[in-house]
Image (tube, rainbow, N blue to C red; front, side, top):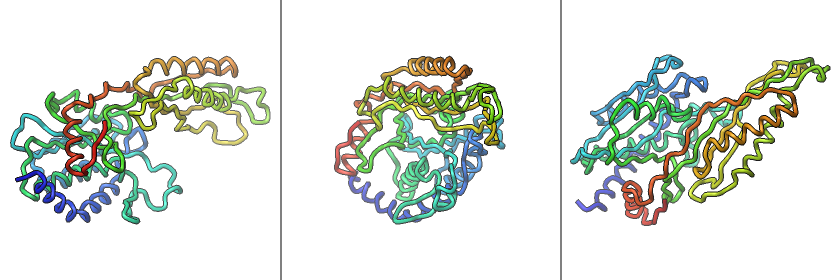
Length: 357
């Protein structure tokens, strides 16, 4: 059957499933899958729901890979591999998405319950509906449409629904890679969590990730006698300002990325003292750094340490800089790679546009 006719059949089938897609989004949103490190229980309940849903949808070949985690009530972090077998099993076309979501943040900033998704003007709102359920739901329904139409793909299709993406991936894709051999050299792997509204951007590289926990130690005192203490909060505030100079030091641009620069942002802040009239003797904040591959993570760490040393000397504090996550960027995928060329061809045939990588 000509490819255009196949696509038209699948397109009509998917359009008929629109309400089902929205329903699945709402059900997934109602199962918070927040990492223990962020105050949640992990993804076990969401994975259990999805396993049942996938089986009922026609997936008969499922694997559940459990990464041990004593911090999770279930004792593990789940990774689901779902297969739809094709004519040739020598290669698998993988679509990888993740189960976990970030915490909802300040609830007062939401116009509704973040875990009760709602539809408004053609859009779905709720925690996790975009990151990462939109591509998870899309990949599931792409295969559901194939099953419903009785179409068998040329190669096996694999859906990898992994855990722990938001807090480092050690219990997610890293665990799967280190403890299984499901991914093979000839497989094509797509991670559909980037792009543009026209569907013409193919991301082939990522920035390095550096998360820092910065602890400033001073000396506690009464608020009325600040001269008897060393204000750790004040010193930490000056350090945050100093660390913003990283933007000027590591200022090169690469238009392959959006934004095209490295970023260095203070994010999380731990409480220091419970009352107003105490000079804090300890202060903790966190930095989220996304670093262009042309710079090494070690370069940034060394420069940040120098900035901290200057603050230590100026304010007579001690600063401890700990690593929460350090993930150097993997080598970029070549724009000539098979998976990139296959995606370009698909975009050309479906959207009649030229994609770029």
